Length: 66
Image 1 (spheres, one colour):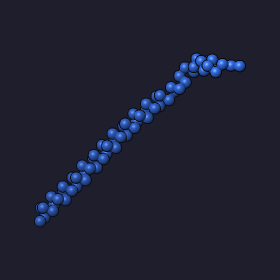
Image 2 (cartoon, rainbow, N blue to C red):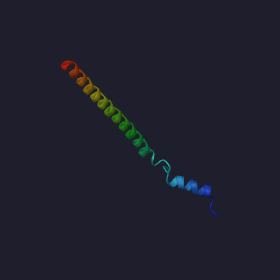
Image 3 (cartoon, helix red, strand yellow):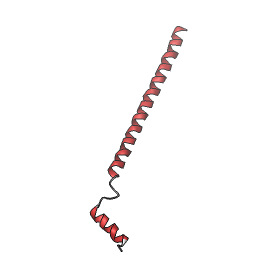
Image 4 (cartoon, rainbow, N blue to C red):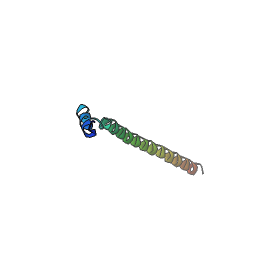
């Protein structure tokens, strides 16, 4: 019978990066997620600034015409 520990050793010798093959993909997903979060935060900030600007313009027009 084959020893399971011996089979594991053979596997690690044949495929030294087994188990770490997705490390680059996971790191890329993390960076893309961070970038998307920053982009969404910037878009929300721009939208809020635009809304506040519109409200200020409406308020100013109200005082000018009153």
